[in-house]
Image (cartoon, rainbow, N blue to C red; front, side):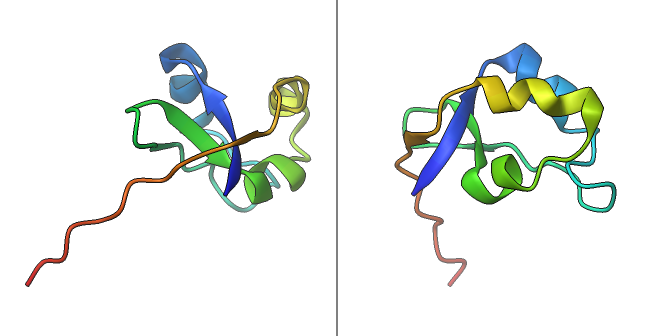
Length: 70
């Protein structure tokens, strides 16, 4: 999966913003406990307040596997 890695400050800025005027960013942790946003969030960014994410590089991200509840 591709995504954009974020530092803690960037994550905090994005988690209260909408990337397209409707949907909120959803920064999540990867296997290295680093925050990232998805390639979809990156590609669909139309909010002028968050255009700075387009300057960050897309990278391969290894996502955490969720633990089954049962």
